[in-house]
Figure 1 (cartoon, one colour):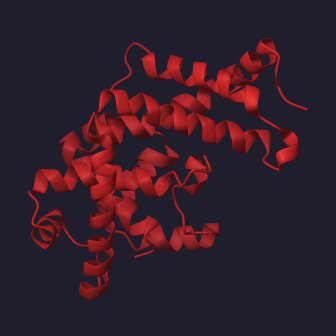
Figure 2: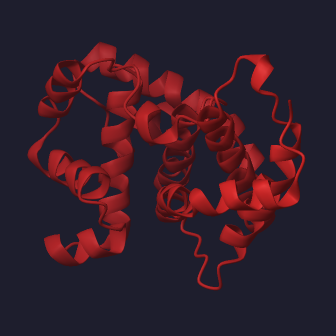
Amino acid sequence: MRLLRPEEREKIAGMYLSTIRFYLLRFEGLLGVEDGEGVLVKRCVEELVTGLSSYDPDAGESLDRFVRRKIVEGIVSGVRRLIPDLDSSLALSRDLIRAFGSLTERQGRPPTVKELAEALCWDEEGVKKVMRVAVLSLSTDGTGEFSTNIFAPARTREELARKIESLDADSRLVVALHHFEEFSFQEIASILNREEDEVVTLYSRAMLTLLTGS
């Protein structure tokens, strides 16, 4: 049995509007794009309605998991139109993730932006940009489990708590405010009296530490 009726698909898409906005908050903050006119939200809803026509409950994937995967695919598709070099940044992110893990293992702590820049022979602004994309590539593994998978490979609350506790105080605060309190990076910058770019870099470095298991 497939969800073929348009009104049924539109109803399901409407139920996930808050999820779409929640995911977009992460993408917008990290990639520095804004959806002030709701273009990305509209595109995600349209693609979700279309995508739901191919949902087959007999295939073994739950409706919720299918919908979340389609939402992430829709956002990435929309962001690609806004950021032409996104694919090249995704390719570079693999090099950055390897360098991040290698330096962390060697130094016993996560590397700074400057240390990553020196190891990769990149400029620091380039490192900051690719760090943000790297966090997204690690956070969306094709399953659509963005909100829960964001802390992978932590599998339990206790493990997650230990991993966050291992971060420095500023990083812990930024992660907590962004993920648990759902403040935007701009709002966090205002709260902490810091530049927004600095807050995003702190967050990216912290998330790379959590996501790579370093």
